[in-house]
Length: 173
Image (cartoon, rainbow, N blue to C red; front, top):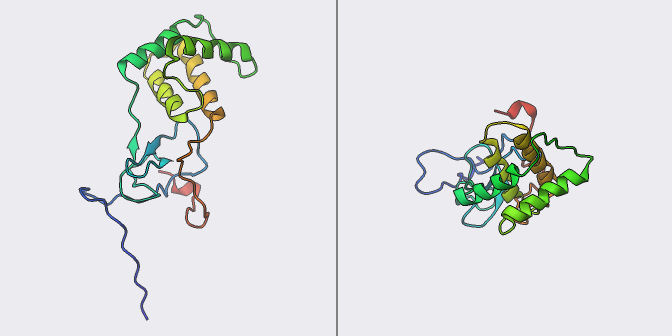
């Protein structure tokens, strides 16, 4: 009796094989530098540096969230520009954290959400494009902390069975 392996589903229109899950990535890496992507078919969200199909439905390739629009970037940079020239982010000082959060609410309050990792990651990526200085570094540190404290997206794909998703450091690319 021979065993036959089921074929991998293939997304129509793709010119090359695209894996279903980001198997070479560390599932424990939940940091802000690990890009969030989504499936426009089932709305699943997962982390992946590589081009992968949705681990939930396998119908679509993960789509990266779009960068902030020029208008939103201007709002964000207006808040950053209000920081002191010698701003230093201190995890132990809530005053500076909430002062910047208040600036965000003043300049970007119509769209910024401290409970949305997608929005926080988009802000972080936007800030990273700018020339480094004390204000930019403060904002980067702030968004890293906001990201850590924000709840996980309710549509986040979670690996239920560790055997299905085995990762070792040698698998990194």
